Image (cartoon, rainbow, N blue to C red; front, side, top):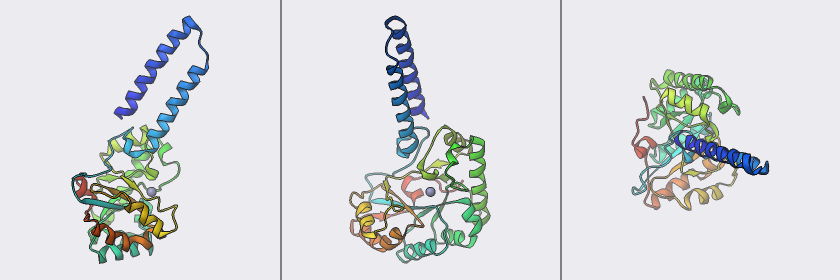
Length: 257
Ligand SMILES: [Zn+2]
C-alpha cells in the first residue's frame, strides 16, 4: 500500500503545482490530461504486476543464494487433470502448492484431500475466480475468501495462510480484504503462460531458460502443455542442481494459520 500511497501524494503535489502555475500563466489543458494518463498507466501497472507490490506486500521469490525453487498450480482441483499432475509429482517425490478455487474444493473434496494427503500445500485462490472478483467491495471479497477457507477447512481441517489473487490482479479493495483476513499474498517469479501455450516443448524451454535458486513458478492444473512437459521439467530441474521444495519452506512462512 505504501507505493500506491506515495504515488498518490506525488501526483497530488504535481497537480497543486500545476494549478498554481496555471493561475498565473494559463497553461494548456493538455498538461492536466497528460498527468491523468500517466497516473492511470501507473495504476494499471500496479494492479496487474503482482511483484511490484503496489497495493500490498507480496511474496514472490525465495532466497536467491539457495538452490531451492518452488512450483505452484492454480485453479484446481480438477478431476483427471489434477489427478494426473499428482501422479507425476508423487512418482518423482516432489512437493508443490495448489492454489485452489473454493467452489471446486466444495465439489471435489476427495481430490482436495488427496492433494493434501500427498504432502502438497493448499492455498486460497478465491471461491468463484470470477472476472469481477477485484471489482467487488472489500466486504464481499473478504466473504468470498472466508467461504474458500471454510470449504478447505471442511476437508483438511486447516485454515490456509497463503492467498493468491485470481489473475494476479490487486487493487485497494483486494488489499483491504487480504489485510483484514491476515493472509500472506503469494505471487511468482516465473509466469509460465501455460494457459496460452499448447506445445509442451515450448513451455519447457520458457520455464527453464533462466531458472535459478529462489524461483517460484506459476502453472495451472488444467494446462495440457504443463501436464505433457512436467516429467521432463522435473528431470531438468534436478540436472540443473536445483531442488524443488514446498513454497512455505522456500519463503519461510507458515502454510496454515
Ligand atoms: Zn487463477
